[in-house]
Figure 1 (cartoon, rainbow, N blue to C red):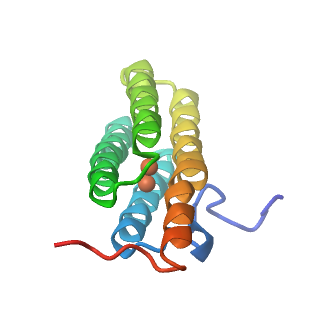
Figure 2 (cartoon, protein in one colour; figure 1 turned 90 degrees about the vertical axis):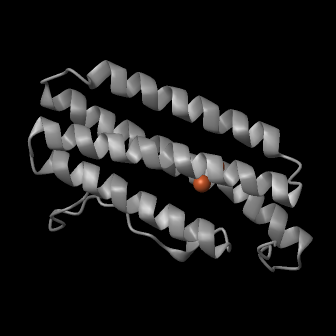
Length: 151
Ligand SMILES: [Fe+2]
Ligand SMILES: [Fe+2]
């Protein structure tokens, strides 16, 4: 669908469908979406390459910290798919590193646009395909209740 009047067609909006019903994780995912929006804003607004690079690095750093946090929670929960999920995180982190290496020194705008889209798609796909598995696991285990924080 086209949004001819939408000045920011690249923007991702949080919606309840993206909720994993675990407040601390939802908060991280929301923050993450904001960082991706900030990156794509810098690309769309043709900000300086140093600004685009900085925002790309913010997304990558945040992704790594968030992946680590999820993996710590999986251990706390005894989540049976923890290993498989951690492999997905490692694969995503490797793709990011490769994207960053590929474009780091590029002065070509289109390469940055493409990289921004790739990062966005990869993260949204991970959220919808992988993170939703632990949401479903928890909803099934706890009669619709999200896991309580331990300790
Ligand atoms: Fe996540
Ligand atoms: Fe994840």
